[in-house]
Length: 152
Ligand SMILES: CC(C)(COP(=O)(O)OP(=O)(O)OC[C@H]1O[C@@H](n2cnc3c(N)ncnc32)[C@H](O)[C@@H]1OP(=O)(O)O)[C@@H](O)C(=O)NCCC(=O)NCCS
Image (cartoon, rainbow, N blue to C red):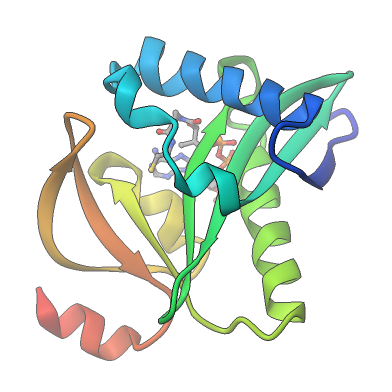
């Protein structure tokens, strides 16, 4: 795989705007998430990450600091770059940066057909399936794993 550079970028920067364009392409156009739900007020305060390859933003995610954990969201990889370990690299880097600042608990809501990706990164699903953006989701976390599986 060609070199992938992972960066944390400020909102409203050129790179975060490219990330928002990628999110629109992936979530709104490809997955038919309602456009009015895609960008939200969390984007103003979230920590945005991009993966840059061959001069383009090819993947993105955001981290939202919540009282009980850090929430990972809006994980999107350009279609042409999927299946090459880009999401794994991006998520691992974002989590490592947060851990270096003392964060020990991570949470996310995953599309139900994507649980395997996050299980490989140490997350377990908990609680019932629910709909978000028109797609079934499960909550997942990488802490209190024994009790997480008991809630099912
Ligand atoms: C889901 C998505 C982010 C995965 O990105 P990716 O760069 O192709 O994933 P990676 O190549 O880093 O995969 C890492 C590992 O997870 C696995 N994996 C990836 N997608 C998976 C899926 N849908 N189900 C189960 N396992 C999956 C890979 O096989 C790989 O395993 P390995 O390390 O043992 O080889 C990408 O397909 C995407 O952007 N999809 C559209 C948007 C989306 O669905 N976002 C996630 C919302 S929860």
